[in-house]
Length: 167
Image (tube, rainbow, N blue to C red):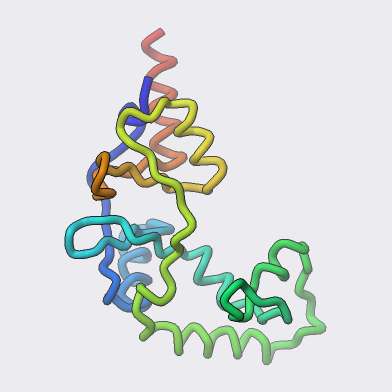
Protein backbone atom coordinates (compact mmCIF):
# COMPACT_ATOMS: atom_id res chain seq x y z
CA UNK A 1 0.00 0.00 0.00
CA UNK A 2 1.10 3.55 -0.66
CA UNK A 3 0.56 7.09 0.50
CA UNK A 4 -2.22 7.47 -2.05
CA UNK A 5 -4.38 5.29 0.24
CA UNK A 6 -4.52 8.05 2.88
CA UNK A 7 -4.19 11.28 0.91
CA UNK A 8 -6.90 13.79 0.12
CA UNK A 9 -6.86 16.29 -2.71
CA UNK A 10 -9.36 18.91 -1.55
CA UNK A 11 -7.60 21.34 0.76
CA UNK A 12 -7.30 25.04 1.47
CA UNK A 13 -4.09 26.91 0.70
CA UNK A 14 -2.60 30.35 1.10
CA UNK A 15 -0.20 32.52 -0.92
CA UNK A 16 3.11 33.93 0.31
CA UNK A 17 1.78 37.50 0.11
CA UNK A 18 -1.30 36.72 2.20
CA UNK A 19 -1.08 38.11 5.72
CA UNK A 20 -1.02 36.26 9.01
CA UNK A 21 -4.47 37.77 9.63
CA UNK A 22 -5.74 36.30 6.35
CA UNK A 23 -4.34 32.88 7.28
CA UNK A 24 -5.82 33.01 10.78
CA UNK A 25 -9.23 33.77 9.30
CA UNK A 26 -8.87 30.81 6.93
CA UNK A 27 -7.83 28.45 9.74
CA UNK A 28 -10.60 29.62 12.04
CA UNK A 29 -13.32 29.65 9.38
CA UNK A 30 -12.60 26.08 8.27
CA UNK A 31 -11.59 24.56 11.61
CA UNK A 32 -8.10 23.57 10.47
CA UNK A 33 -4.76 23.92 12.28
CA UNK A 34 -2.42 24.57 9.38
CA UNK A 35 -2.47 25.61 5.77
CA UNK A 36 0.02 24.99 2.97
CA UNK A 37 1.58 28.11 1.45
CA UNK A 38 1.88 27.77 -2.34
CA UNK A 39 3.57 29.95 -4.92
CA UNK A 40 1.73 31.02 -8.09
CA UNK A 41 2.67 27.75 -9.83
CA UNK A 42 1.31 25.61 -6.98
CA UNK A 43 4.73 24.68 -5.60
CA UNK A 44 4.85 24.16 -1.86
CA UNK A 45 6.80 26.85 -0.01
CA UNK A 46 5.88 25.70 3.48
CA UNK A 47 3.10 25.68 6.04
CA UNK A 48 1.47 28.23 8.29
CA UNK A 49 0.56 26.56 11.60
CA UNK A 50 -1.36 27.71 14.64
CA UNK A 51 1.38 25.93 16.64
CA UNK A 52 4.17 28.02 15.14
CA UNK A 53 2.24 31.24 15.63
CA UNK A 54 1.64 30.43 19.30
CA UNK A 55 5.36 29.69 19.74
CA UNK A 56 6.14 33.16 18.41
CA UNK A 57 4.03 34.65 21.20
CA UNK A 58 6.14 33.12 23.99
CA UNK A 59 8.78 35.30 25.62
CA UNK A 60 12.09 35.13 23.75
CA UNK A 61 15.03 33.33 25.35
CA UNK A 62 18.62 34.46 25.13
CA UNK A 63 19.25 31.80 22.49
CA UNK A 64 19.56 32.58 18.79
CA UNK A 65 19.13 30.52 15.66
CA UNK A 66 21.80 30.18 12.96
CA UNK A 67 20.91 33.58 11.50
CA UNK A 68 21.16 35.42 14.83
CA UNK A 69 17.42 35.80 15.43
CA UNK A 70 16.12 35.24 18.94
CA UNK A 71 14.47 31.86 19.36
CA UNK A 72 11.49 30.59 21.32
CA UNK A 73 12.56 26.93 21.17
CA UNK A 74 14.43 26.97 24.48
CA UNK A 75 11.27 27.65 26.41
CA UNK A 76 9.42 24.87 24.61
CA UNK A 77 12.16 22.23 24.59
CA UNK A 78 13.07 22.67 28.26
CA UNK A 79 9.52 22.19 29.53
CA UNK A 80 9.70 25.48 31.39
CA UNK A 81 6.33 26.05 33.01
CA UNK A 82 4.87 29.52 33.19
CA UNK A 83 3.33 30.40 36.49
CA UNK A 84 1.81 33.50 37.98
CA UNK A 85 5.28 34.91 38.65
CA UNK A 86 5.40 36.15 35.06
CA UNK A 87 2.35 38.30 35.65
CA UNK A 88 -0.51 39.52 33.52
CA UNK A 89 1.68 42.02 31.65
CA UNK A 90 3.26 39.06 29.80
CA UNK A 91 -0.16 37.99 28.50
CA UNK A 92 -0.87 41.56 27.42
CA UNK A 93 2.48 41.68 25.58
CA UNK A 94 1.63 38.37 23.86
CA UNK A 95 -1.73 39.78 22.74
CA UNK A 96 -0.08 42.96 21.51
CA UNK A 97 2.58 40.93 19.71
CA UNK A 98 -0.13 38.89 17.98
CA UNK A 99 -1.81 42.10 16.88
CA UNK A 100 1.44 43.34 15.30
CA UNK A 101 1.98 39.98 13.59
CA UNK A 102 -1.41 40.06 11.82
CA UNK A 103 -0.06 42.27 9.04
CA UNK A 104 3.07 40.17 8.40
CA UNK A 105 3.23 38.36 5.06
CA UNK A 106 3.19 34.58 5.22
CA UNK A 107 6.52 34.50 3.38
CA UNK A 108 8.00 35.94 6.61
CA UNK A 109 6.56 33.34 8.99
CA UNK A 110 6.04 30.19 6.90
CA UNK A 111 7.43 27.02 8.43
CA UNK A 112 9.81 25.51 5.89
CA UNK A 113 10.88 22.50 8.00
CA UNK A 114 8.87 19.68 6.46
CA UNK A 115 9.28 16.49 4.50
CA UNK A 116 7.36 15.66 1.34
CA UNK A 117 5.86 12.41 0.15
CA UNK A 118 4.82 11.22 -3.29
CA UNK A 119 1.70 9.21 -4.17
CA UNK A 120 3.86 6.07 -4.40
CA UNK A 121 5.59 6.53 -1.01
CA UNK A 122 5.05 3.33 0.99
CA UNK A 123 2.28 3.59 3.58
CA UNK A 124 4.54 2.77 6.55
CA UNK A 125 7.02 5.45 5.46
CA UNK A 126 4.11 7.88 5.25
CA UNK A 127 3.18 7.03 8.85
CA UNK A 128 6.79 7.55 9.96
CA UNK A 129 6.91 10.97 8.29
CA UNK A 130 3.57 11.98 9.83
CA UNK A 131 4.88 11.16 13.29
CA UNK A 132 8.28 12.79 12.78
CA UNK A 133 7.00 16.04 11.27
CA UNK A 134 3.67 16.15 13.15
CA UNK A 135 1.68 16.47 9.92
CA UNK A 136 0.09 17.41 7.74
CA UNK A 137 2.30 15.66 5.25
CA UNK A 138 2.37 17.26 1.81
CA UNK A 139 2.15 14.98 -1.21
CA UNK A 140 3.83 16.45 -4.28
CA UNK A 141 4.22 15.33 -7.85
CA UNK A 142 7.61 14.01 -8.85
CA UNK A 143 10.03 16.64 -10.05
CA UNK A 144 8.14 19.93 -9.71
CA UNK A 145 7.17 19.89 -6.00
CA UNK A 146 3.64 20.94 -6.89
CA UNK A 147 1.28 20.12 -4.06
CA UNK A 148 -1.30 17.58 -5.18
CA UNK A 149 -2.61 16.26 -1.84
CA UNK A 150 -2.18 16.14 1.93
CA UNK A 151 -2.09 13.32 4.45
CA UNK A 152 -3.12 14.04 8.04
CA UNK A 153 -3.22 11.84 11.09
CA UNK A 154 -7.00 11.75 10.68
CA UNK A 155 -6.88 10.73 7.01
CA UNK A 156 -4.29 8.07 7.85
CA UNK A 157 -6.47 6.64 10.64
CA UNK A 158 -9.46 6.54 8.28
CA UNK A 159 -7.36 4.74 5.65
CA UNK A 160 -6.12 2.19 8.20
CA UNK A 161 -9.68 1.58 9.40
CA UNK A 162 -10.77 0.96 5.77
CA UNK A 163 -7.86 -1.44 5.30
CA UNK A 164 -8.74 -3.33 8.49
CA UNK A 165 -12.41 -3.55 7.48
CA UNK A 166 -11.47 -5.06 4.11
CA UNK A 167 -9.59 -7.94 5.73
